[in-house]
View 1 (cartoon, each protein chain N blue to C red):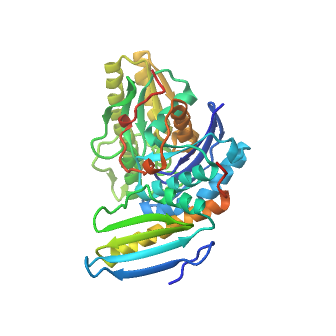
View 2 (cartoon, rainbow over the protein chains, first blue to last red):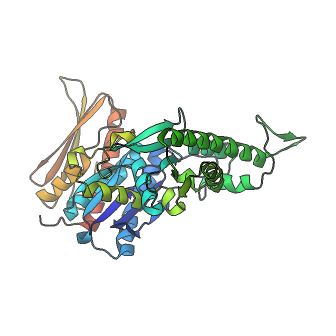
View 3 (spheres, rainbow over the protein chains, first blue to last red):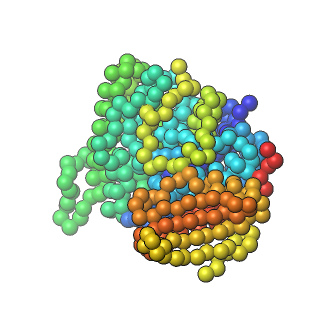
Length: 313
Length: 105
């Protein structure tokens, strides 16, 4: 029996989760939500995390019904992500690892998403579409690495949606992407940009439907190409944008056409959370990984394929 | 200058090194034990300064005191780094208060 606690705070969510042999015992999370029209800045985000992290840690232990002695390994997000929030979370992880006398394990945030997706969906060896505010990658596992087959050449798709939400001042509660999705559902016309004007009125839901249809179609295309390249019959969508039902629908159509299976998780696990770091940590710890304190520095850049995936064949 | 520390008062000093012309800042933080000072040291030392140039710091433990020495080109850069460190130190101390003392190994 192996119990791992995972700390995650690389963007505006701070989450701490505990996993015991594939069972999520607790996964509390808080989100730093900014006013409409504003994104989240690193130092404000770090301050938010600083204010709640110890409370969330207590919650994680209480909800799991565990004491620190019951924990086997302390996993935390080494990167990628925003520097100041990453440091805030790593400080607490390093400190409790020492206080409790437990080994520390630095986890790649993207691999956290992948391992959580694999655990929850039990997908065997899927082509992975990882889409969030900070990342957009198509990933396939091959010979001990999560290979990046394709990625954004500039900004992440979630970033694109978030920035658009900011321009038209959509609420960031619970997340800008969620609110875009709700508004886009009401749009019924696919319109060509650059803009839609009816006399003195403008139509924004049409633009939002357009944005979603276009960016999601792009993602479906690159995923399909990776599947064809790898001869894969499974797709797993992870990352916050993976919550979007329209994306899942469009991906589902492509999968059906190819006779492939689509896997996705709900908002508990596709949005950044602590348990996903615990799950990746669980896999890594059991296959012999440990991070020495001197090597536990955080890093804003950390490629998914930098990690040797020793826990898979 | 005084800083809140739940363990004891903390000593600080700023000087200009006459030879190098750099600003130097010294901080000594007493802990209840050498073990706890070392826990703080090992939590606070791994991360690099976000700003690569113009600032460097050294952390060490002597007895039960954590010592930090900064060397910076400009006061503004020094202030940012020291403020940031104090925030981090206070988080580590608070974590140790809530989840400590360290277990016997």
